[in-house]
Length: 115
Length: 115
Image (cartoon, rainbow over all chains, first blue to last red; front, side, top):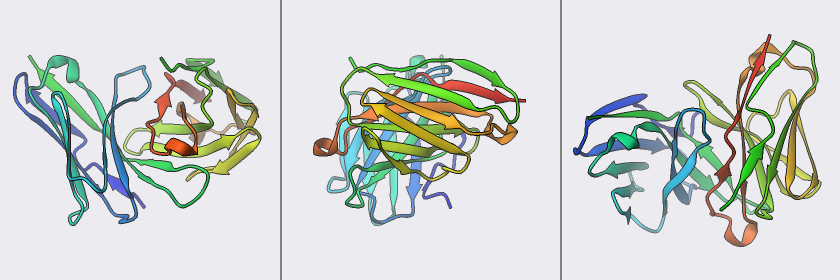
């Protein structure tokens, strides 16, 4: 059962416009959310995160919004640039009191930014 | 800068072979993880380790084992490779329990093909 879902496999956006990537989750115990970006033939790299006690976190062109009641988060990229073209993974973390937390990843959204 | 190195970028193995995937990190991280990435399924956690000689099963451990004899090295073992283990394998590391929400740092992946 997929606890973290990215329902859009792909998204195409014009350069300079806003990209909005969406993510839904089912486990209300998740307390930390992250976005990773992945280029072909490379490992994912961390982009931005948000704690469940916040509803927004911003870092330059990237903003993540969290709606806990809807169990939904989104990543906004403004303005979008061709170099942003990559697969974006949403991930959620739950600490069950063990030695460390585990990250549960979504299925990814391929973003294509057209020049 | 954190570096996670996976020893092979591409591997081709035959069904039934024992396969070793090696991962080394240079940042003295306590936690290490093995994921596999498949189209439409995202990243799924196979095994993780929070200390030397300690290991925990992830979401899909069947058919795999791991070894962590030294802090910097985490090996994934396919005891008897099967075609459904053809995948991209990603190793990651993160600091210890004091910062359990620290982002994961990924290697560039090993694309394994089992024929």
